[in-house]
Structure formats: C-alpha cells, structure tokens
Length: 297
Image (cartoon, rainbow, N blue to C red; front, side):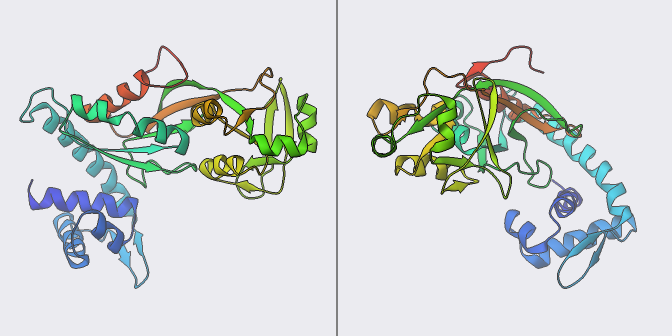
C-alpha cells in the first residue's frame, strides 16, 4: 500500500475519532507519525482538514467533503483486495463486531467454529450493553435490539431472543414466590436500565414499571445480582439456562408471556459490506440462539 493510501486511512480514522493519541495507539504508530500522515493528505489536496488545538482536533468543511471520497475509495480497495487476495474466495482480514453482553458471550464460545473454517479471519469483539456508534467505533457489524429507524444503517434481522424472570432460591424463600405479574410490584426487581429512565417490564401483554434496591446498565451485573439473591431479574434465556439447570436460579412466573427481544445486525449504509464481514454475518444468522427470522437482506 502506498504512503498516500496509508495516510488516507489515517485521515478517515481521525475524522471518526479526532484524537491523535487514540488513533496512534490503534494504528500502532507514534503521535508524530499520525501527524505527519495528516500533513501529507493536507499537502496532497491543498486543504486544511483540521483545526488543531492543544486539546482537540476540529474537522473543517473540507475534511467533511474529502471524507466522502476517502471512504468510497478505501471501501472499493478493500473489496478489490478480497477479490484478488492470495487465496481466491477465502475471506481474510480484521472484522470488528459490536456485541451486547449476553449475545456476545454466547457467540464468543462458538467463534472457534468460524475461525476453523476461515483461518485468515481476525475478529475484534467490542462487547457493551449500550449502543456503540458504528462509524465512530469503526465497527463492521453491530448487534442492536429493535426497532432501529436509522437511515445510516443497513438492517439484517437475526431473530427473537426469549427472556425469563428468575431469582435465587434463597430470595424466594425469604420473600415468597410471585403468583401473578401484579405481585412483582411488591418484590425487589433488579432493574436493567440507563440513567433515570424507569425500568419497564411487559408481561402478559401489560407494561409495568418495576424497581428495587439495585439497578444497573450492565446485563452481566444484573445477572450476578440475581445470583447473589438481590431480587427478581429479567434476563435473556441463553444467559440463565445453565443456572436454572444447576439450581442456582429458579424461574419466576414461568407460565407468563414475556415479550422477546428483536435482535438485528446492522452495518453502515455508506460502506459496502466486505466479504470477510459477510462471512461473519452469515455465521451470526446461522448460529442465532433464538427464533430465527427469514428474508433478511
């Protein structure tokens, strides 16, 4: 790859994450090297692309104009490299995937099957419960809980993920079992929520605001709180099945109808999905742990 192409990749990343130090760490280069690459792009196009201060980089209108062309060029190059790679039709290279915690842990246990079929793939899994910015975090694919109404994203439905109400046996011994959904209002419910937004559980077709002494924006923290006996939690079935079988958790209101999570895979609409990412998307679809949806794009 020529020096200008490397410099253009650096420019795109600086637009997505305007911080010399962070981009330098990602690209395994020095701060000085990153600054020199940006100088090269500015000199080549005869434009000032960033206003630089001691604290931040501020993209100029010329940077916004060039970014459109740079992304299109680099995407086309990625596709060409895949087509003319050393092993024809063998996908290779890095794929960055944004996972929710529960699904991420599920898939990570199975990624060995994917890498065994495609040993030239490299997988970078960014695992958080909040929705990462697909472009800023340079993700090829990300999982979302639907619905998604963002025109900048291409949506691929994966399926429906069942959820269960569970609690530790010791908690139920102390507080008694819930006989109906209304009883949850008198229990310690472990809320999975963000900020000041109240937690709402839809059970048997009716939405209820629930709460208790503990809440978290991490599904893993909610899971561990349930295991410690802090209350009743609503969690993906794939996360608690082993605990139920082992007796660490007990289903609560097992006959109630709980709305499943609609899980989607997304990628940026401005960027063609490269073959290496398409292989990963197909793997996510084929190994989805819930009710799979057909007709995905």
